[in-house]
Length: 235
Image (cartoon, rainbow, N blue to C red; front, top):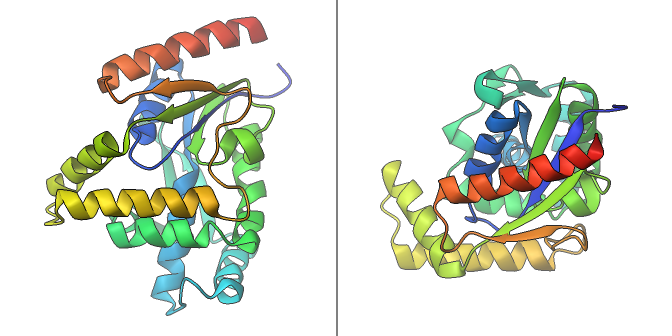
């Protein structure tokens, strides 16, 4: 093979991409690339610097500066996961809050930010892993890896995505209501689908997987079957 195998998984917030992509990577012995975490990290770094997230020029400067200094790094982690390091700090739950989630949607609509992070993603996937990568996000199959070996568009109904997100937040101690969570999911969808650059959409050659009525195990099994069929063809 001339490069590691690449599986691109796109879809809206709350569709289960993180869980499915992580377990798919584990089953295949691949490394997970959570590209959304990069935009969360930029939002987090900009917020810590006191930069308004709707100030495109200053947020772009934050992203450019992180990349230029090598202050934002992606590293493979145990269990086929990835570790995101910003200024020497391994980021975790601090970039998984509702506020940072909405902030990530804002900064991901900034062309300069997307340009700053593009090569970082490609370099990691194409040169930083041995066997292959499962990359998940919102423009993986359309922009980041248009030549991916397999493209999956994982989705679910708004109601189901809101329910899953609410359960996740409640487990972290959040008091956000289901109604508020649903409103945030709808807002996030609108932002992602209507942004002028790299909007969320299904690639023409992506396989649609609707997980509304699927348990995680079933969604993983379906994606694993697709991956083995396609990668077998890849040879």
